[in-house]
Image 1 (cartoon, rainbow, N blue to C red):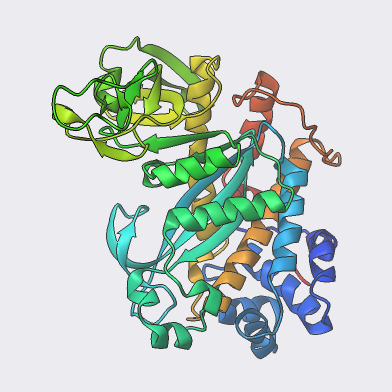
Image 2: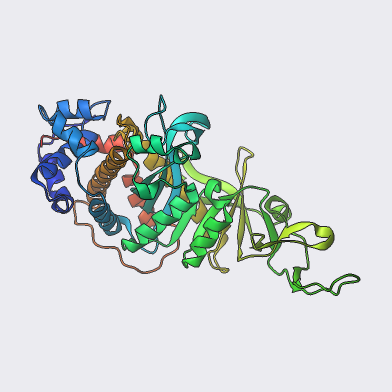
Length: 443
């Protein structure tokens, strides 16, 4: 998997310098490059013991202590990762993709492990679930956030959380959408630039999630279930005169909300291509109409029954795939956004799945064998730093070795230009392809 470029160890150390400066302690400054090198280097297993054998001979205890028990804060390294990510791919035409990924586990003692739905497996499994945040621009992803979701079976058991050393401020139950919004806030506070937040229906079905993004003046495009209720964009609030009984105290909509699927049934559908895949142009049929989401306050409206009041005006977008599958999305992109740009934006979410796969298959994201909260999050942080280094190396090679200039903050459409696609095809190779041009690391 790895070639033998003796200069890469030096390149990695140079790239890690701003991270190491934030660690301070001499031993930690020595162990961090060894851990990252172990993740990047050859070998099928990326847990501490085999990595120590390959890159820290005789220092297993120190490497294990660094990742599992050392007294150092992750926040400074996380802040540096955000700065490096923004420098590499940040910009108003970047997207921030919110998703989650499962780490299958045996037993019940590893922090957060429980029977829960694993999207990668398409079924319930005994696993840990990480809420992820991926910054991507021109189809080049950088993972910048991985936070463990704790099921209620954990948050309701203080003894269990104590044994796994879950920090006190993380012991309350938080939904995945709440964790995601906290990550969005952390990433924005870190100065990362992006133009749109993307998420699948697991997050998009949550009205509080969508509303929290809008309250932060963020653009977003999210998946929704086909049965999500919406109103026509021109729905009006009326104040009907009561025929009998008490006069009405509140306005009501002049029409009933209907399912997204029904709203788009008679829309005009167009065949569009949003990017080139390995087997040619990717094509599907799309339609979009302006609607008001039925996610306002609930109330009973005469013979309409219980209805949610009209909320924000947004795009309702439908996708009909060649295999017959149908998907539905909501987006608060501007009313004059062309259908092709809407399609390109919602389909940009796929890049996070590529990042999840590469982090697991190439960098050992799911290989950590410890049980503690701190150890798991430090391991995920090291995998994200390793991934960022490889993506930086990839971008430099794609640009002919020139230094990567800081992207301008000019607003661009969500879809890439032809020149950008040429860069994308060169930079979106499997991570193993880059590792074949990169080193055995000897730090």
